Every structure is written in C-alpha cells, then in structure tokens.
Image 1 (cartoon, rainbow, N blue to C red):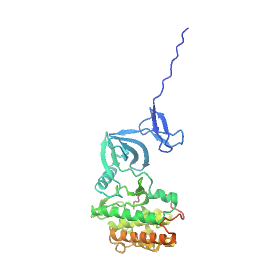
Image 2: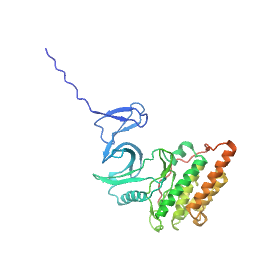
Image 3: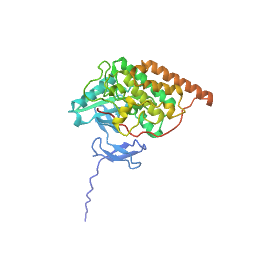
Image 4: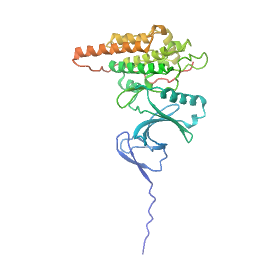
Amino acid sequence: MVMSVQSSERKPLRMITCSGCGAKIFVPGDLPPLGTTPCTKCGTSLMMPMSLRQFELRSAIASGGMGTVYRAWDTMLYREVAVKLMKREMADDPQVLESFYREARAAACLNHTNIIHIYTFDDFEGQLYLVMELADRGSVDNRIEKETRLPELDVLDVGIKVASALDTALKHQLLHRDLKPGNILYNGEGEPKLVDFGLARNAAAGLEEDGPIWGTPYYIAPEKVKREGEDFLSDMYSLAGTLYHALTGHVPFEAPTVEEVVAAHIHTALTPPIAVIPEVSQVTSDALVRAMAKKPSDRFQSYDEFIMELTSARSQLLMRKFNVEGAPSSGGAGVSAVAGTRSWWRR
C-alpha cells in the first residue's frame, strides 16, 4: 500500500540583523512593511524593512507628533541616512504640512557642520518623507537623563558649536525658535547636530500679537512670553537655558505648573550655575547668566560675543585641568535631573 504525505505549507522567512545584539534573525516573511516582532535573542523590536524609492527603511529611531524617523539605507549611494515619515492622517492638516515643509526648506538652505543636513524631500504614493543625515547616538536630553549632568567641557563644546550653527541660520535670516536638549542630537563621531526647524521663521517677521506662543516652557525667553518681540537673542536665551540644564542637572526655573515655570522666566532671578554646582567655573557661570538676562539688551549682542566667552571659559578650564592634573580631562556626575519636558506651550 502506498501512502501519500501531504507537506504543510511553509511560511516564507526573511533574515534581519538585530540592531540591539547584532544577531541575524529570521522573521516571518508575511510581516507587513514597518511591522515589528521581538528579537528571539535579546527582545529588541525587529522591523520588516520598507522600500521608499532608493531608500530601504530598516529600523525606527524616534517617533513624534508628526511622524517617525527611521534608520535607512540609500541603495544608490551606499550610505546610512535617516528618513522621517509624516503620519498619513496628518497630511490633510494645513498647519502640520506647513511645519513639515518649513523644516525641510529651512534646514536645506543651511550648510553647517552642526546643523543636520537635509538630502531630499519627496512624496511617494501619497507618503511625505524627509531624508537627512543620520544622527542616532542620542541627544543632550538623553545624556541628561542618563548622566544627570554633563561635564563642563562637554557643555561648553555643545554651546560653542550650536551657537555657531545658530549664527549661520541668522545669516540666512532664520530663527530656530525651539532650542532645547531634545533638539541637539549626536552623530556617530560625537558631533552635536541641531535639528527640528519645524518652528523656524524669518528673523525679520517679529512676533505675532495674536495666536499661540511657540516654544518649550523650561527654556522660553521672557520677551516671547510678554509678546514684546522675538529675535536671535530669544534663541540665545533658550540655548543658554539648555546649557544650564545640561551643566547643573536642573532646568533654569522649576515650579509645580507650566504657567508658574513660564512666569518665573519673567519675574524670578536666575540662580547662577555656580551656586547650584560649586565646581562649575565662574566664567562659564557668568556667561550663561548673561545670556539668560531678562532684558535682551543685557545679553551678548552677537553670537560671536557669546562664542568668544564660551571659548574663553573652555580655554581657562583646560588650562586649569592641565595644571592640576598634568593633562586635560572632562568632569564628572552630579545632582538630580528633571524628567521630561513639554515640547510646546500655548498661552
């Protein structure tokens, strides 16, 4: 007697390299593009790649209100890039679209080492996407969460480079308008990169009398809150507030509610960084206090001035460390960090 054996249908498999442990893992081939499944070795989420013209999206890096940023491979130029996909449901929102276009066009016209480079902006079968330089080594915000506070030399390095980036933007008549730790990313070489120009606007446009005030409450300049105008000195204030947070482990002003935090920018005297962390150098502390003066006229009147002061602080710190230790090195850890910040505030 002859017996027939009916073989069960085998599901197709696809091999994916895990970004967590580096292992090559087989995942179900019928998993939809961008669909995820856990790595069988380390539990990291594995994503089914998706092709978008010549870009193969391989894993998610970050997700926000407007969309998700993916690590991708450019199959034409053989390089890693970041691809930001706008959520399809937001494509009909004029305000969201304007912000997406603004981010693409603003950053694309700027050529600076410490501003994220934009490669292309396109629409593929109704899917809007932005392709940019890959900066996937975390942000200043991530470092604050992990380390509590950053070494003074690192803070000065970020300050000098991002102030220079903002100066380049200003030469193109652009204000960033949302400086905060989460908008300064690091690339594979450890270089800080200024990102998210979604709120950028012409430097000559001023501040609208009506409508929302955009910014992050912990770093927003007092003149913006009071609707007294907005210029590059407002960006300088926010950058200094970001550096203050990174240096001390505390945001410049802390209060139970967002409204009280915002009011403190106007009414409460800033505690100098050196009063929070005594080992901070006086010149660094003084530079941040001046850059965060309540009146814009009391701040540094150009980015060059601010950069010169930060550079001087860095040189003095290096000399001091060299004299004490025999070789330059970076500082250590500290107090408590403030968890999570709101990305915008409407008044």
